[in-house]
Length: 354
Image (cartoon, rainbow, N blue to C red; front, side):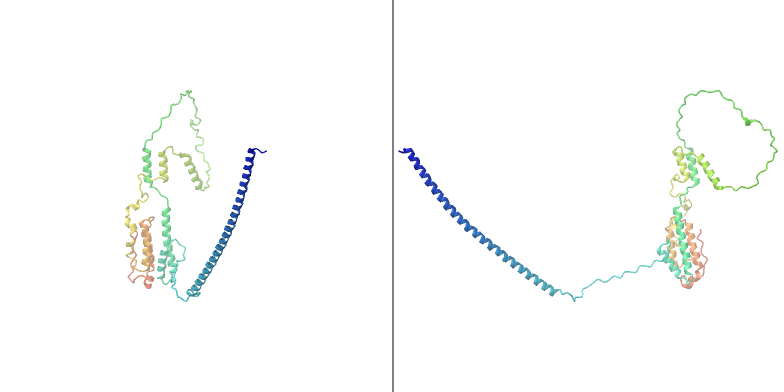
């Protein structure tokens, strides 16, 4: 016989199994419902996606069609408005004509182009021998430029009198000399007597003797004599022992300015000449040069160049002007015939040496 405890256990087991079956049945029903719902939702989503893709494709086709229509209309309008060959006469800038360059005279010279043109104008006034006259004028102008260049490059030559005065002044200056140090005492030796062999009186046996002198004359070698004197100077002269001697040597050689400093050293003659005489040279043209014409233009260029030249003295400038005066005076008859100068009584050219 079963006990009551066992009966209760059996009842509990049966109740649990029934519950389990109910739960399993519910789960199965629920899962089937969920699956059916999922299938319906996925089918709906797929249908929506297909509809959307079709709508996008339609929109793209419509957009492409509209763009093609716009492009076709634009191309038609441009063809109508802007034809290939326009019949309009548009304004164009005028072609600027370049001025022809002035032909420079083909002469290799140091003179300025404007001066050469003036020489050409003067030479054209002569009916004959104009080339020779032109060469003479150019040669004279080149000699002036060469003279100026030589004067510019010539080294400075100091005044000998001022250099000698400065040397005497420096020689009179006292220079502090250090006292020599005391030397150690030396032993004094006895004086030695030295006999002079040549101190006796001559015997005089050759007093009246005559010797044949060589009558041949030998030419003096000046180059060897100059080199010998130079060697003697190098042996005799010593290097300067102090700064004063070095300054004296440099002053003699012309390497140092004389004292007191003068910016116009070597131009003592020009000190008596006024500055206006260097610059204003036109009064020297009044007695002989015409007032207008190629000769006047040429001489004005000459005096302008001379007034700007700081390397020539006033006397040299007057000499150059006098040369041109004599040159044109020699050709006076030709200049009168060609009309370069007025027909006037010939006057002797003024002297500009003063």
